Image (cartoon, rainbow, N blue to C red; front, side):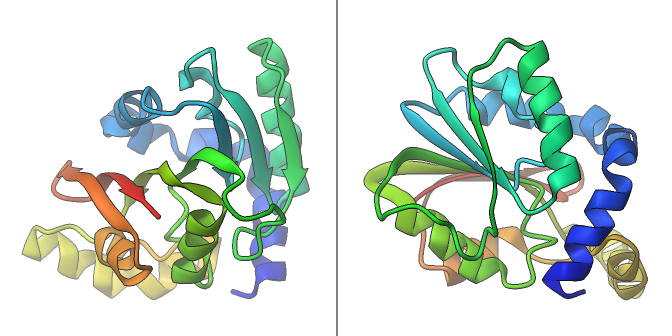
Length: 202
């Protein structure tokens, strides 16, 4: 999908998105969000914030800016932020061309996004650019299972799945992070190796 097609797709499914992700949230993504977002501090940039499911897990001292390319998703994220009484900045922005100066943020966060970015390495390099030198890049991702049979099943259905929602579910998040030149501090996989928790530095 082109970026325009991805935007249109997520605008269309925005109201159903949380329901569509209910199963992975139940299978462990919710716990991973909580675990890694407790490490966020200072000025935080949440890239491709979607419907804002990360927002409830940030420490209260964080100053949050969140961006996404889908206006419909941002609208839901705004409602969620208001319901949580959070004073955050929400902006429409492309993850592969983040409109902030170098080293603007103490923490950069993204969740379940590397599967969808047309150029995930470029997006990670942008995250690294706007993160301060000793800051943190916190990722919760999903990708190809390290169980051979399940991984092959994902491979066989990957193109069909990507055509529906722009999600390439057999990408390898850890390898993409390394190829982007980030320094990995902590990384682990859960649920048959599908879900990834990664803490990195620029």
